[in-house]
Length: 111
Image (cartoon, rainbow, N blue to C red; front, side, top):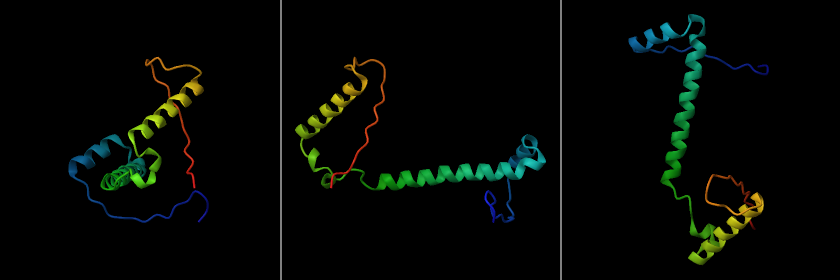
């Protein structure tokens, strides 16, 4: 297969009469296949995302063993103050508490 080509296969799909009538009314005849394929791709993306989110909900995102440096309230306080210091250094000023600023921090695992 060349670049940009996909293997295709014909299938037989049944539609509720009302949905088919709406499809025929809105989408021109020679564009329906592409419309249905794109709609299916979008629905699959949503379903796959929902599945991943459900898997993430089922397992803990935080494990104490992964963050021994944040074991106490004082550790967390130090971490937050450090982040705020980085934000001030990045923006060149103290946050007034108004407006919104985005700060991207790149984490590097320490081995």
